[in-house]
Image (cartoon, rainbow, N blue to C red):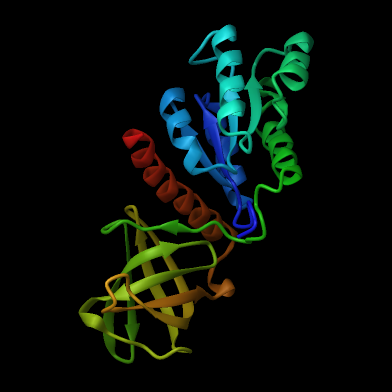
Length: 254
C-alpha cells in the first residue's frame, strides 16, 4: 500500500498544557493526534510508525544539546519520520538551526501566539505534509468494555459491543449473536463510550465475520442528521481518546 495513504500518526512529545486544546481542534479536523511523555519509549516504538510526524517540545524533557542529538538520531534511524519543533522560545538562530541543520522539515512553531493560532499553523503544516492521507475519518479500535450501544428494534431491546468507531460510523457485535439485515435502520441508538453517552441514528451498511470467525460484526453508518456539530465534535474527541489509550499501552511496552 502506498506510504501514508491511510494518514499519518502525529506525536507531540512532552506536550505543554496549551496543546490539549490544540489537539482537540486537530482531532476535530480528523487528524490522528497522540501525546507522548517519554522520548526513549517513543524512539523505540517509532519504527512501527515510519510515516509518523513527531513534534518535539524543546522546553521540556531534555536540554538543547540533548534535543539536537535526539532529533538527529531519530532522522538517522527512521528517515521517513517527519520532525517538527514546538517551543516558547522565539529565537531566530535556534529556528534556523533546526530548520536548516537538524532537518526539522515539519516546521518550527512558537506556542506563545495562543492555542487558536497554534492550531491553525499546525493544521497548515500537517496538510502540507499530507498527514490525513486519503482517508476522511480517523478510526479507533474499541477494547472490550470501552463502548456499548443500545437500540430498540422491532419491539426488542438490542445491546451491542463496539469493536471500532469513527465520527462517520461504527462496527458493533450484538449480544446473543443477533443478526440484522443490511439496510436495517437503527433509530434512537444510545451509545456509551468511555462512560460518556451519545444519542445517534444509523443504518446497517455491511456485515462481516468477527476475528474468531463466529459472531457477525455489523457496520453501521451514522445518519448525519442525527448528529449536530457538538455531537460530531464529541465523537471525534472520543475517537482520539480511545486511540490515545491504545497508544499509551504500546509505548509502555516499548
